[in-house]
Structures are given as C-alpha cells and as structure tokens.
Image (tube, rainbow, N blue to C red; front, side, top):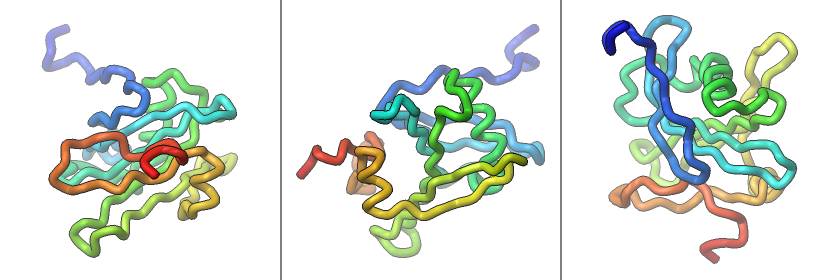
Length: 148
C-alpha cells in the first residue's frame, strides 16, 4: 500500500495544545478542524473541536457525530469519558462573540448543543482564553485560576 492509497492517520493530540485534525465526513466532503484536549478533575477528557477558517469540507457542526466517534478512537478515549465542546470564532461578525457549546449525544447518537456559561466553565475548571488574532495559536482555554 503506498501513500496515495493508505488512509489518513493522525497523531494523538498533546494535552493543552491545539492541533489541526483531519476528519472523514459522512457526506464525503472531508474537513479539517482544530482540536485541543485537556484532562478534567473527574477523570474525563475535555475535547474542544473548533471550526477553522478555510475548512474545505463539511462544517464541524454538521459532522460532529462523525468527528466525536473518530476522536474517541484516535485519542483512545471512551465515549462516556469524553466531553465535547464545539467552538466557533466569530472574528468576522463581531470580535469577542465566540460561540462555545457543550455537545451531548442522546441514546440514538443525535447531538444537542448547549451554550457554555461561566458556571459551566467553572465546573470544568477552565475558562476561554482571550486571544489576539495576530498571535500564534495557543491553548484555547486556561485553568480557571490562571491569567488573572
């Protein structure tokens, strides 16, 4: 099998470091997103899935079920131990209006999005990082007691 016929295999994400992740979309329009994983105090893993400008394929929102399944396997995290947060940076609309949504799945696998408020972030022990758009990509979140 040569490199043109071998399926894409990504490296596991390093904790606290955003990395690009190529995903297989259910409609065949595979895409790219940014992911970041962080350990939670309750032994679950928080995985942020961020839509990136220039994603050539299906949106993160429309492919979230497939992305979650692929991340569970790629990162070796059981689905019940993975907390998915979807992030959309809204620079082009109004700076500072990023969308952070907790994604949960019902028994049939259908997703539900719930906006994260300060109390939800506090329960995770993190909060979103204020980012400067010209800075190099860094962690999307910080521990709640950092950068104060």
